[in-house]
Amino acid sequence: MKTGEFAARRASAPVSFPSTPHAVAWHAQHSPDATAVVETGRSITYSALAADVAGCIGSLTDQGIRRGTLVGIEIRPERYLVTVLLLACEAIQATVVPTSSADIQPNDPVIRHCDRLLLRQPPTAPGLPPWHVIEAGQ
Image 1 (cartoon, rainbow, N blue to C red):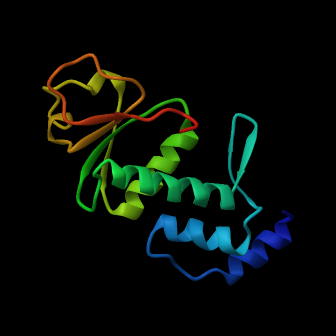
Image 2 (tube, helix red, strand yellow; image 1 turned 90 degrees about the vertical axis):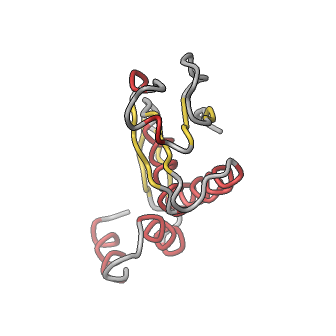
């Protein structure tokens, strides 16, 4: 997309959006083939991002994540996956706590209050809140 095309598209956008997922949906509708994210040399369009977020919303609600759920998301190298998880949780109106692998312990003052953990791999520590492994490409 050329600079002038981007400026014209931005000028036609609403002044503000109620949430980031709303902004992604607007861009997916108005410029579906525009690049939304670039990760490790791969370009992801707004259309693909919106579809991934919608699919993730379905998966998360199937896991019992609802408005007001406190979700711990393990930060991982796959930034696109983290972005999709964050956008899906925002759309559901779940509260998100980013966490590192080292923090995933039952005595962690934040982790122990999470309603659900979204992890890279099964945890080794017993006594954690309910968890689900989210793999890249899932």
